[in-house]
Each structure stands twice: as structure tokens, then as C-alpha cells.
Image (cartoon, rainbow, N blue to C red; front, side, top):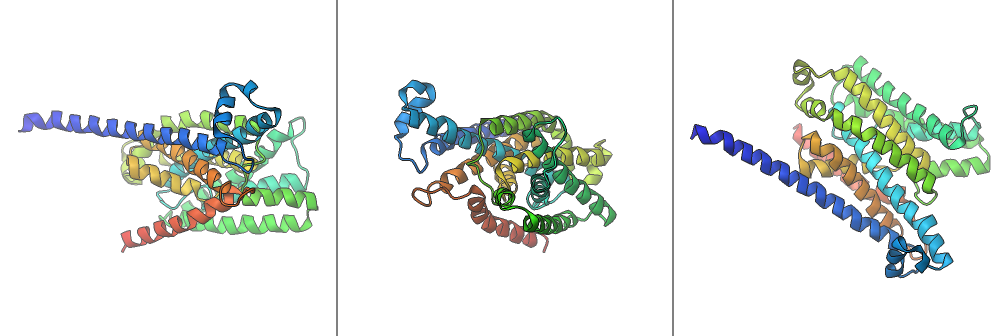
Length: 351
């Protein structure tokens, strides 16, 4: 019996890893279908067959159809995937290093602080000398997001670092950033106020190919660093003391994660505005399907976030005929009941 136990465990472990890999493939396949659905959905009534053919043969489209496909729908569909992946990736890492299932770029105030940084840059016309505006604006959004992340780390350490401390400070930062953004709007011009409103609602329709390239590049740049820390993050889920005893530099790991998530939140917010709940719900979906092994959970959270925002994009264009609802409104309406469900689940778990 004892001689067969080893091979049995190895076989079970291999089967579990195969199952996780297959589930990742299914999520990726679902993203492909959602991406196609996002392209063919919109106010303009166009044939799905013509649009799909036009992706591979642009000459088959009329000039108007070509503009709709290549300048509107493809960039919108791709930015939904890139931003969703960024938020899902940021969410799963913050939940792990802060040991809080309710942590995300939105609930921790990283997104609202990034929006505040962007608002300051817009209203007061602050820029970096010799640097293009499309680089300068994300930089100030990053500074706002990073400031919020570092403040949470410092305050959590100063007040004991309990499981609920970080999320409480994050909620406080959300209210503070929202209030300061409103105060800036009060003194801003009508044009600047309109731009700020765009940040606070969340909208995919103003993104172009440049924005798609920047967000995608940041996600592809950050992802390898996340994957390099998968075993440290997996060990950290077992408890901070246990991870430290096994050689995990917990404080340095948290700092690296805050830097990464601040960058991801900043590029997402500065191009499409504040998107709520994707960074919270996406990692939990991946966790339910894939477990806590971050070798699979990290890419799973990124894919789940991309799928959620892509589906939300489809819904935003389908609810009202001839109109597109800002996707941030859709994610909030869907995310609020899920968020409340998570809160109730965590409360019951601690009774």
C-alpha cells in the first residue's frame, strides 16, 4: 500500500494540473468568442459575416464599414481585453499580498487615486517638459495610484496590519480621492470637467490603436514579473509567518506588487476611466476554477478579467438600441451584488 501511495499522489497531481490547463484553455476560447461578439455588436446595423470577413480582407468592406470596423469596433474590443487583463492581474496580486479577498485596485483606492492624478494633470495643465502628452498623463495617473498604494502599506503596518485594515484604509482613500476630484471639477473649465467625468464613469469608446498598444505593452511587460513570483505568492497564501520561515521576503514582495498594481491601474484608468469590480470579481472566478496555485491563478485572473470586461462591453452596446452605455456603469451594476455576496460569505466564514 505504501509503495503505491507515491505514484498515486503524483498521478493525481498531474491530473489536477492537466485540468487546470484545460480550464485556462476554455477561458481563452471563451475570450475569442466574446471578442468576436464584441466586434459584431454595436449601434450600426452591419452584417456579422461581412465584418468577420473584413478582418481578414479589408478590401471586402465599404469605406464606411471599414471605418466602423478598424477605427471603432476593433480598438474598443481590444482595449476591453487589455484593460480587463490588467485589472484582473492587479486584483489577484493585491488580494494575495494583503491577505484580503475584498482587495482590488478599485476597493483599495488605486483606481480613484489614478483618476485624481489624471484630473490634476488635465485641469492644471501639468506636463513633463519634452514628453508627449500621451506619456505625461499616464505618468501622473501612476503617481496618484502609487501614492495610494504606498499609503495603504504604511498605514497598515502602523496600525497592526490586520486582515481588514488595508481594505478600510482603501475605502477611506476612495472617498478622499473622489472628494478631491469633485473639488477640482468645481474650479475646472467646462471642457476639462467633461474630460474628468469621462475618467470617473469608465468608457471604452474613446480608446484608439495607440491606447490599445500602450495598455497591452504594459500588461505584457508586467506579466513575466508576476509569473516570476508565483511560488512566493502561493506560499504567502499559507500565512505570512510560514512564508517568512520558508525564505519569502514578504515586505519586499508587497512593495513589488504595489508597484506593479499601481502601474496596471494607472494605464487602465488614464485611457478608459475608472472600471469597478473587474479587478475584484475576475480573480475570484479564477480562484474558484483553478485553486490557489498562482502558477495557474495569475494567468487565470488576467484571462477572467479580460473575459468579464469583454462581456460587459457587449452588454453596454446591447441594452439600449442605437446607444452605448458607458461600460463602467455596466460593471458597477453587475459587480455590486457580487461584491455584497463576497462580503456576506467572508462574514459567515469568520463567525
